[in-house]
Image (cartoon, rainbow, N blue to C red):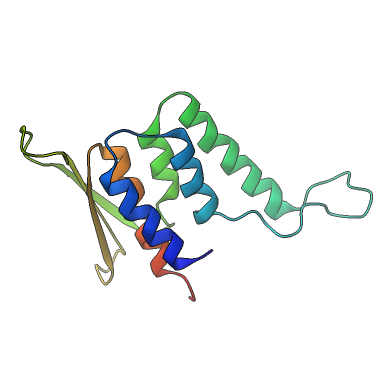
Length: 137
């Protein structure tokens, strides 16, 4: 996972006006790269536990997107143990961003915010920034 790619995607999510299946799938694949080993053995009869877990998460994520449940999909990107806050921003002709999310560790040590046109875009952008911060941990 490339930190610069993650930050660039978070910035892009904050600027677009509407959710996109492709953009959210890009976020998923950057946030959760596929495990390097797929098969348990050479016969290729059984997936590894890591691949099974990744596949199930990806399937759930894609099903949310197929149902246009973008906010539900974005919630899957929130790093485990992190908390979030949400709010709406003043809606008016002069604003193109109407949603705000903040993700933070329980001790409030690290915090990442994002504003975007929709709650799903804002949460996805904040989650991607939080994931990028964990690079190298």
